Image 1 (cartoon, one colour):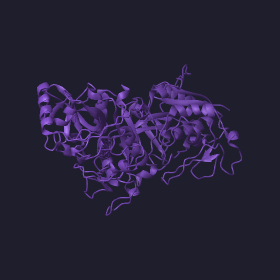
Image 2 (cartoon, one colour):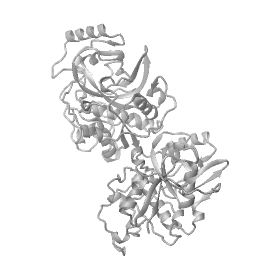
Image 3 (cartoon, helix red, strand yellow):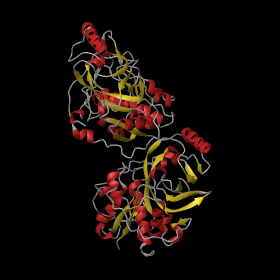
Length: 620
């Protein structure tokens, strides 16, 4: 991928070049040249073309900006992608997919297209229950990493949504939403919005009440199949490409550059794909209003990385509270599709910690932990096994932790498994509750409450040690866990390496280390053997909507969209009604599931649960 593709997107709007309008004579000449050179698309002359907006220039190549957005790895595969796909047809209950925005007289394609794609995804991932029009005004007014109407970085816009949130927006001068989009198409010197963080008069909510956040922002791998898979699973994505003069004259067909000089770069949202007269295309929504192109949409040649369109592809997933209505619909869907497990609606489900997940799948990081070899064999493994029964002198095996309003499953589950193993390998003589606070405060390879790597947490225990911890505000242990389930803006712990007041030991005196960290072979028997011999292990799997509603039985994914990845500790296994399962302790408190535990289908690597299995041994 050429560095020149890593740039400040120019957010072109159809119109004047360097400040002057294109004449009908110039348009006619350009259209004639296009018609003589292509049969795959149709060009036309637009009346008063300059009134579609003003084009901004100003390339700013920046490799660090592009790389700051993490690349999506371990993308869930789709067995068969259709030859053609249109998001509007798959998700007809999301009207935003049909809407074309108008960036107006402002070089803001990079924020307008992102806001449109976020709006689509917010609806899609709520099953059509959440209709919220995310706006570009927050970017233009308050985003310090954006450049207002002078172009900007698409990657920064997705991360801003995660970090700062976005409010709602209506069309130009509509009076709708927290704010109305500030620019029209006719260049009447509309002022730039200021960062007042206030909604317009008459809007019923305060600015802070209207904010909605993203759960993740990422880049999609730069190949055709990966991009199609992402759209098919999660909804529209945002891409960028180099614009030439002929693109402005597009009317219909599959666009391919044939003539004219370069004008800059543009960001748009891709909503699907197809084939027309043997030519593969992306189905794209532009941001120049419905008067341009095919009612605002266009088709762009696919699979050739034409003009760099497949180089940088951005997306993200929303974070929101689920309503009782959404829960009821989801539970009904689950009940109609499975008999192996029972679902339930939870009162105030968001108080499980906003259903925090917290794993960042990454094969290279995962493989950095050595694979356990020469595992000591067990002649006979029982059909069912529960660590709580074998090591009844270790009460930690019965305890369910609560990661609270923090994406810290990757460290909470590890700390719990380490606690179990420390007791088990001492024959019950050592009762020490290892905590997550050291990870949150001092682990430079962790990412606090925005997810991290299980592999890093086990190695940190070996290299740096961990101190003891009590529950949230318990006053017990070197630290008390810093977050609860009610999202009350508890502060992050700082790395001061000091125990809380009243604890009898210093931080260094309280530290206890691991002797080893390793991965277990990715097969059912090896995992069972490790648990049987040494105690609980930590695993990871992809989470879908239906998992949140689990109450009892053997879980298998049956409905809903993906939400991310989660880390849990496996304490045993068994068989229920002929279905093999792993016995798992979650980290969402005892109110969720079967008093905090869940049975998960075993031996099929369902949702990747048997791919990466982590463990270690203590040092005394």
